[in-house]
Image (cartoon, rainbow, N blue to C red; front, side, top):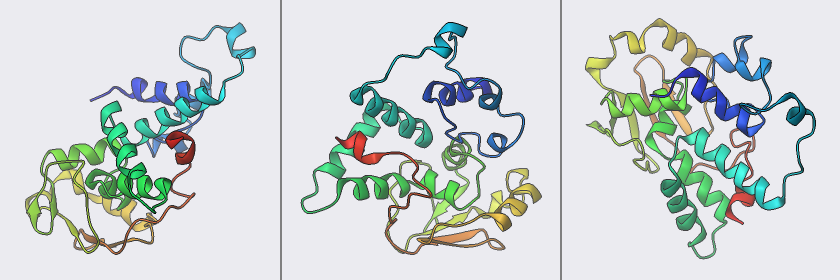
Length: 208
């Protein structure tokens, strides 16, 4: 589990908020608000940063996506290769669908977790069921019609207490997901569609 400062350093390196600690990112406690420069940068370097090449920009964009989804390098490479290898398909749309269809990402999108890291932990600890079966693999690929629910024994724990219920009530779901906040049950309505509002990163630049 990474420390709060380690997570915030990823935003500082990227030069923008990646919203990895979702709720904290919208408060005055956000470290990026106070220190928007790269970690360890000297005052002179902050004022006179060198121009980033196109390749450098692509690498930076890739790093943002890896951090946002909590992926290792090889995992991300596999997703890109798979998306690029489908004939007649738009690689960017395929990559988006693959990333968003991960079980931990869907748990986050449903509002059950306040961050991607927490969603991964929920899945890994066996709190989540897929079609009624306990699934502990964060990268598990969900399909159209799959049902996601919280394990009965987990519903009454502090992990799914009032704070989570209040967050879910205010949470905006992507159009491809449905969720019953009273039963803690949801499902995948359709294939995830590329939407700039939920994918602020340049997938095309990464694939190129």
